[in-house]
Image (cartoon, rainbow, N blue to C red; front, top):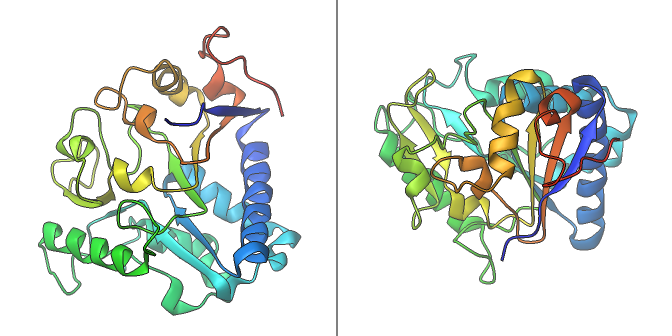
Length: 261
């Protein structure tokens, strides 16, 4: 059974990014103290990038042992590696180029000019194999038990590159899929599936702005993942929605009374 989603509603998107950054730094430090390492799945988009920028600006970032952190991605635009549309390129600009990561522990999703060329299905399988190699015998779904998996919520309720009623959101066996014909550009992508997402200890969903209010309200009303993929994203121990007031504005109070932060 999935954990009941927890909501934290912040005054505005800037405060949300700063608070989420502090929360993530603390989670990484705690995981490293407990097990020596930590693993995080990054997300792109404006909220994911704002979170990374807030970490870069935080004095507390030095509490993290960056050399003992594994970084993965929830999805990626299947374009050449240097293309500025790639989530990885944006993440490097905001944070990754500024901290002493172990390059062997940064697990970039394949690019369209990589080993598989334009074959997005082969690229997805390559990433699935990398996840499987990192998984322990006790881990679920042939992926590591990520400490935190971050997801931005799109205005249509998509998460990663799993779009409403699209084939990828129906996948229940594979951990990574190639996505063709995505309803927002670029149309070809690589994405974790819901089984892989649900293997994470904690899933944090980020949404800020008025344009996300309908999506947040719909996803939290429980319509099912085919109609609202965000409603199918949850962790094994915690599911956390990090919102600003504008994104939370249409949530029915009877469903989830938002607690301000």
